[in-house]
Image 1 (cartoon, rainbow, N blue to C red):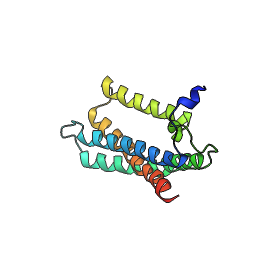
Image 2: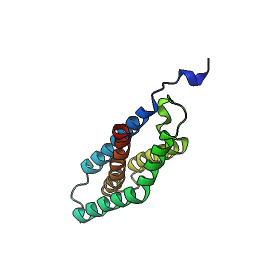
Image 3: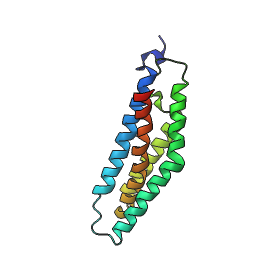
Length: 143
C-alpha cells in the first residue's frame, strides 16, 4: 500500500474551509498577541498603531489578495477530487509560513526588537491574514 493512501483526504471543496480556518487562526492569534503585548505606555502609540493598521491593509491589498487568489484557483483546478487534507497550501506556502513563524518567535525570544515594535509587526501581519481568510470562506460557502 502506498504511503500517500494513508494520508487523510477530504473533498477538495473542504480545502477552502480548512484554509479559511488556518488563516483566521493565524490572523486572530497575531492580532491578539499584538494588542496584548506588555508594552507599557510607548510614546506615540496611537500614531504607530494607525500606521501599523494602514500597513496591514496595504499588505493585504498588494500581496495577500494575489496569494489567496492563486490558492483558490489552484484548489479549484485540482484534478483530484479528494486531495490530501494538507494540500490547501503548496510547498512554497508551507515554507513561507514556517519561515515567518520562525522569524516571529526568534525576534520575540532574542530581544533584538523592542516589544512595542514586535506588537506592531504582529498587528501589521495579523490584519492581512484575517482579511484574506474571507476569500476562502467565500469560496467554501458560495462556489
